[in-house]
Image 1 (cartoon, helix red, strand yellow):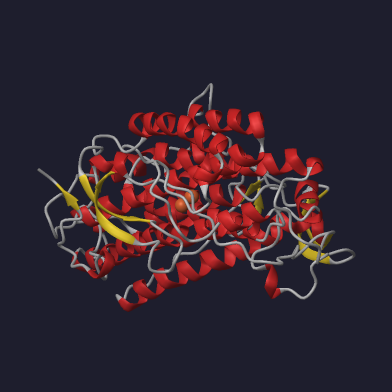
Image 2 (cartoon, protein in one colour; image 1 turned 45 degrees about the vertical axis):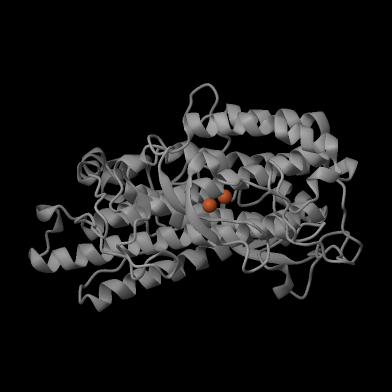
Length: 470
Ligand SMILES: [Fe+2]
Ligand SMILES: [Fe+2]
């Protein structure tokens, strides 16, 4: 097992041809994947040449190979970070013992559930975004959308590789189910809530890649610490791709914010009058996607999280930063709901690990929001985008079923419903944003509601032909 990528049907650095049974199983899954991609992937763009980055090896110079390619010909492959000799469990009850190269029987179900749940998000987001190609604000953005889409497809491959390799028949069945569920489908929905929400326009797409893909970063980081070594190595490589998705989101919103400020100045504060997006509306979409993404971390106090940590399966974000890795007898101070009131108290650390991870995520989101606010300030506009309280608009965990204002104040349901449209996008906002979504497919041109990017892809100019149109 190494860095050499074989030239098989399925590009890989896991010596797939050395395991004929596995190779046959994955080669049988491959056409099903392509069928799913053609059916549920970007609508109307399958035959076009797109300037895409393809991983051809895990070496620093090999994982970012750029060329024009038709999406169904994209080389979806299996890439794991090279194995490190002598790696040991970095946390949990087995701290310091050699990591596993196979799944231990007692943790099989827990591990399978984590892999399936992660795997399910990957095709879900492709499905959520499949219509966006009809309305991209530029060829640069169109190309970025497809880059994110093909890489989410590759992330599905990464999880399916683990299911096929380590979970036998069950794993193969789960891999088929991953292609059978559909985002937003009443009968066969995707597993997690945020992945069933429509991403019906580009402002939601940028918010999704800013906030929801960033949840992915934190989940993958926690799994990258895993004592199940193949899972850790898979997630480490996925993280290199994930960084670009968050760049698309953060810089996308930043460009919308910038344009909003410019149009405000041109119109005496009313960018909507000239087809722009106003800052308060941007704030509402941030509130929506941020709160949906907070749900993805799961319950605030969780015995599942404690079990996964104890077992050495799911660690913390950058476990190396901590001195203590067993977390027996330590506590985390956090808000909890007791007798209908919010109280701040110590929770046993292992049970608080979802909240610990969510806290790291929140800090990371705040850094991005700070950069948006710097753009607003640089434009000379007096406005700040803020992240709402982690209790606002939650559907999962302790705060769901209770009502909070964006500032974290507990309110009653009637008040929340009365003010919902101020805090979250309402039907009129949706209609307005959708009305702006007209494709701009002339090289170097940009829709009026968004500023051009600071620079092009791979050192190329902004007016490069990122997508070849006939
Ligand atoms: Fe992903
Ligand atoms: Fe992603």
